[in-house]
Image (tube, rainbow, N blue to C red; front, side):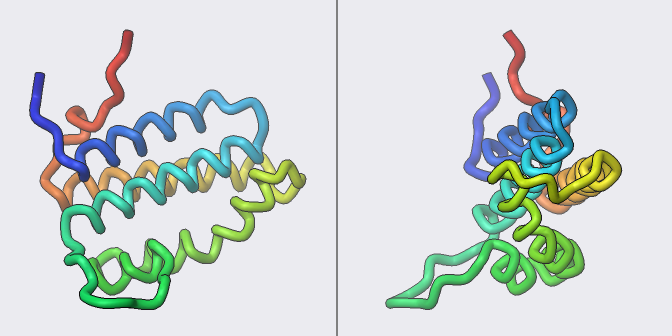
Length: 132
């Protein structure tokens, strides 16, 4: 059994989310699961790089923090932040996304996941969910 880190665990969860998105029955489910997968990939970067805040700090979104902590992922952070409201609507069951939009977001989440794995020097194969 290989040792795990919080970042590796989050990337495994992100990879699992991509698998769930691929088999989702509706465009809304696919979109929401792909977006949540990207959120977990972003959280992996934060787990690896962020320092605990001293004292009280205002609440910030993962996407805002990601752009600050990993500026090289700033465009991704902006992209996924802009799609967060649509994800929330899709999770609520509203017909806000087309199959094409869901497929595009899933593809983007996969690319983002791969870039995060590379950035954190975690082999994507290590991030694959266990089967069984």
